[in-house]
Image 1 (cartoon, rainbow, N blue to C red):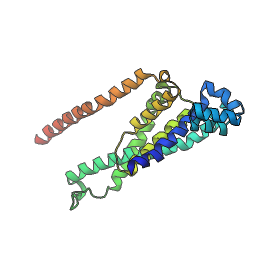
Image 2 (cartoon, rainbow, N blue to C red):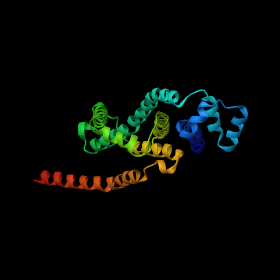
Image 3 (tube, rainbow, N blue to C red):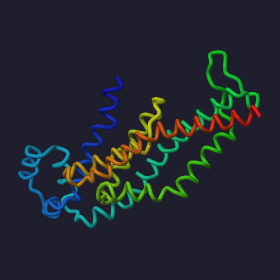
Length: 239
């Protein structure tokens, strides 16, 4: 069922990713450099967790600098996977809304199907949605990236890889099930989760709170702007 699928595809990988994130902690610096004995391995498994102990055993010969270097490279893959989920979810939502509006207005002769379903999305809409999301990210995305990467919590390469991978897995699941979500909400939750695994004080909850308030206010603000825009267009049309 969906619950067991979610557990296998998201929760279990997150436990392993959490263990990888702990490699960059100050306490883990000694544990990574030190060759763990089998007795120490068992003790870690009992006192901490099996993923933590297993990860530390596998990476016992790796220094924090070497681990960071590897995960800087792996972040290229995790960022690409997250970007794929970003386009697969956000861009498709935009295409669906635009197609629904065009169909309701009868633009390009578009009509609803016999069962009330939308027609095939025009290529122009697909290209416009792709271009808009790419140009938006290119023009103003750096501010969002800066806030997410440095203002919520301090991310190291391992933490960035964990957050991006967790968000990519979540977006892949909801996209395949046809569930529209916000990619910004997803990556923010992943970053907060990575920071909280170190300690709760590592997360700047004031910044996170302002982000949540911005999300809440976005819906009524967007509705107000849409209502005003509709009133202006309707007035011009009547004239």
